[in-house]
Image (cartoon, rainbow, N blue to C red; front, side):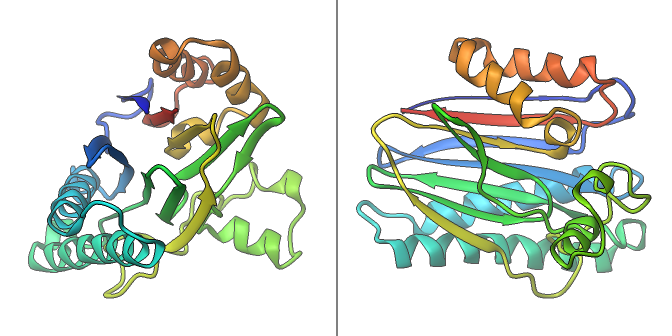
Length: 241
């Protein structure tokens, strides 16, 4: 497997509260994207704490030839551990109260692609037909959409479109969503923060993924978001066979 990752502050924000990390374990890949939230650098602290805790917990529990149950337990417990540390830190320091972060994590072995997520950072699977969103956003507008209370075209203009219904570190306990899909002989997986997915449509992202060499993909996707105004931090990881 091959992978690339990158993060960019964008054109508007004063700091980058996103973090991405990709590591190998027994020839398999763990990739995580976190998008922090909170003022006075607490969002940046939340994403840093979360990604460090996830990798520390995962690396201490991972072993070769894990089955689906073991991967699911380790991925979700790693995110839960991160949730506990961020939640506790926010309550020890009043300046950090309310901080939190999104999280999307992928573990890829020789048989499956496993995804766990909290918040609105996304995982996509690209095939010859186009871009397929794996995760479901934990946002107010997505909840309203699923309930039939708003139309799809209202999602990007709704006044509360950025409000999360679930995030790492905000509540004492968090439950990540978990997905498993069979790994095909040829695959391409994208993890990203909403600085990319919130401003670029699926067709634009797919065009880059399908036409640009892997090593040039991060710059091409970041430039795509910057051309849309770069109003948020932009972060991504791409893993392929």
